[in-house]
Length: 263
Image 1 (spheres, rainbow, N blue to C red):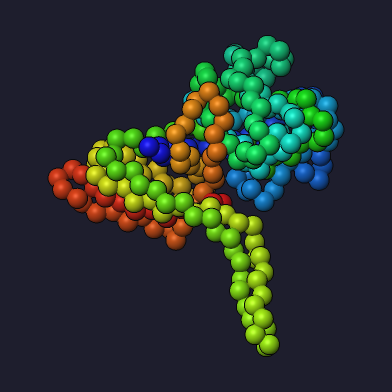
Image 2 (cartoon, rainbow, N blue to C red):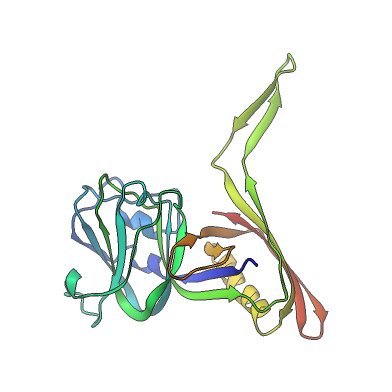
C-alpha cells in the first residue's frame, strides 16, 4: 500500500545569504544560493570538478530530520553528495571533524529524491560536500526538513497521480492537426483521504499545508513506500487552486481532498 509522506519546514532557505564555500568554488553565473531558494528553475554549480565543501548557517539550531535534492545531475556525473553537521556548532570545524549524516549517491534516473537522516540532529551549522565529479554537477534545490509527517493512520489513503504534458492542440486552415509542447511536463495528484482522525492526520493536513499555502511556499511529498536507507523519489509541490476540501464523516472522523501540482 502506498504511504504518503509530507516533508515540511524546509530550513535551507535560512542559509541562502549565510553560506561559506570552504573548498572548491562556486560558478559566479550559477551561485550555490540558487540551491537554497525553493525555486527549481534556478540551479547552482561548482566552478570546477574539484571537491566542493559548503558550510550552511541556519541562524539557529533546528532539528533536521530529512534532506531532499531536486533537479540534480549527481548520478549523471557519478558524484557523491555528503551531508554533515558541526558537533560543537563551531564554525571553525574542519570537514574531517564533522559528524556525517550520510554519503548519498543518487542514481541518474532519480533527479528528484528525498530521504530521512541517520542520525537526525538539532544543529545550527550544516555542511555538504560534492565529491568525485567527472563533470561539473548542477543542483536546483537542497532542502533540510524540520517536520516530516507520514500519513498512515487513516483506513483509506487514496491517491491518483497524473502526468501533465502541457501540449497544445490546434488545426491548420487545411485541417492538419498540430501539437506543440508548451512547458516542461509535471506531475499532479488528486488525494481523497477518508476517515482521518481529527487530532492526527487531519489536523496535520490543515495546519501544515495551510501554513505553507499562506506563505506561498512549496513543500515536498513522497507518494510510495519509503525506505529510509535509500533516496526515494520526492517531489516539490504546491497546493493546486489553493484549496483544501474537508468534511465531517462521523464523530471524530473526517474526509478531505487536496489537489497538488509539482512546483
